Image 1 (cartoon, rainbow, N blue to C red):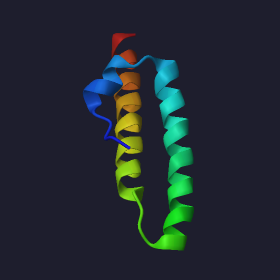
Image 2 (cartoon, rainbow, N blue to C red):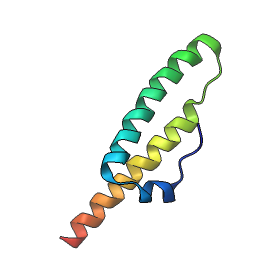
Image 3 (tube, rainbow, N blue to C red):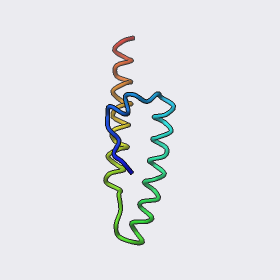
Length: 68
């Protein structure tokens, strides 16, 4: 899974961002199950991508409040 960059998130619309967030959360659950069986995982990378999306969402909400 390639890393998700902040500039890529900025290009996405709200629906795509929400869809990607749900997809990553599902992937995180799958990775946790897989890691418990095999020991290797991509959990840290997935968590970072989720954090980037959530940070972007929070910064957009703050900007919207300032504009109002």
